[in-house]
Length: 136
Image (cartoon, rainbow, N blue to C red):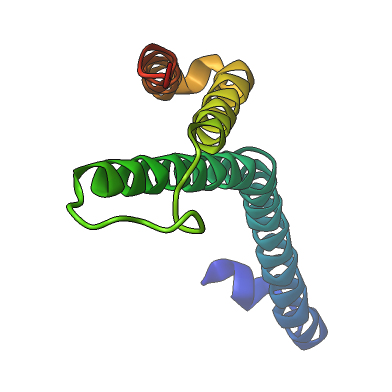
């Protein structure tokens, strides 16, 4: 209070906007730092997470297509009624679907970073299992 008592009225009137200006600068600096952190996190999502999700979605579709083809072949093989030639799934198409799924897993494994080592192990296992269960 002694400081305010020693100040003239003009100095007191200038002190209020000066304090407000200092607080405004502090808020602007904090906002800028938060914006940069948000930008870094968004860049990480765009460059790392979204391509990984796209690759996993593509591999899931390929595996689902191969699974559906195998299911159709097994269903038709166990059916007691004759099938027409338009619904018969060729084993070549199934081989192609399984090969496609395996290529996607192998490509994703090579793209995986050391940060997601557990995911890389799972992808390698899926590619290995696909290679072992190929149609002959």
